[in-house]
Amino acid sequence: MRIDRRGFAKSLSAGTAGVMVARWTAPVTCVATAQTVALKDLVPRGWLIGVALNQRQSDGIDATAVDLVTRQFNSVTPENLLKFESVQRQPGVFTFDAQDRYVAFGADRGMAVIGHTLVWHSQTPGWVWAGNGGGLADRATMLERMQTHIATVVGRYKGRIRGWDVVNEALNDDGTLRDSPWRRGIGDEYIAKAFEFANQADPNAELYYNDFNLATRPGKRAGAIRIIRDLQQRGLRIDAVGEQGHWRLDSPTTTEIDQTITELRATGLAVMITELDVNLLPPAERPAPGQPPSPASNPFVNGLPDDVQQALARRYADAFGVFLKHRDDITRVTFWGVSDGDSWLNRGRVNHPLLWDRQRQPKRAFDEVARVLSETSTSSR
Ligand code: XIL
Image (spheres, rainbow, N blue to C red):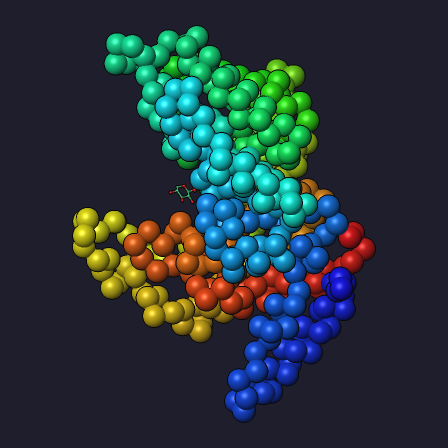
């Protein structure tokens, strides 16, 4: 049964009130209530709500996560499988088996399947940029490699992958173009070329520019807008811009998020939050290999204290409040991982950045996101 958002708001607040009263007498939680609702049923009409899958999930091995993803989301992104190094580790040798299973995973469930990512400085094998003499390949060679890769990968999933992060992370924090090997080999035009090749390979796929820190760094945001305008002036197609959304509890502020969506949307493009998570750990150097992280850098090994759990829930509620204010500007929000245990933000420590905990139970942050979505007027759905 599809629960409408108003009806859900009532049932959730009734449930929550019950918890308030019952908390000291019986271990009732609103988790059970929350589990019966699906984010995909609560988001505004036309919105995609997505999640990044790791290979154990898209292969169907992690059955608990598969069940959760199937119930909650209507879009998926591959966490690593469609990166250059996963698809074409050796020149001309393309690997597509796990990739095909990922695309089938989404297609079987009627989800919007996202492609991530075609042109990036990271997780790309060195041969892509290498010339014969040990230096960089010449421009024509590098362009040829880019085109072959894009034509092969985008072409294979033509009509089945809804949209592609064509270029990922091309900017420095100050808004200048990153000194990536793609740029060194091809020149600034490498971005335009990537969009041109992607459009040729699938004229019906949506094409995105994706980057991080667009909300915290106004200069970087301006750089993203310059990239978008440049593509538009060249008559090339770009359909949306993604702010990754790797955020912290206090940064970016909701004002910065609001402003960022407004400014990006002013280019005429749709805005997507493409890799949302909230890092709760203090910044810290990686410990030497084999060494454990210092206790100070890893404060939540034994779980999240109540106040931080609450702060995380409030943070997500506030962020979704801003997203909903921009419900006509935003077309997709994707979380970067299913549950806390899956997150790339652990990296040897114990982080808690997502809506589901390590036991795959919904956290208070889930309840809050569901509540904020359900309290929003149903008029736009
Ligand atoms: C991360 C993955 O989550 C990790 O598993 C991998 O080891 C490194 O990459 N920006 C991006 C994503 O665009 O592709 C990155 O994903 C996170 C940062």
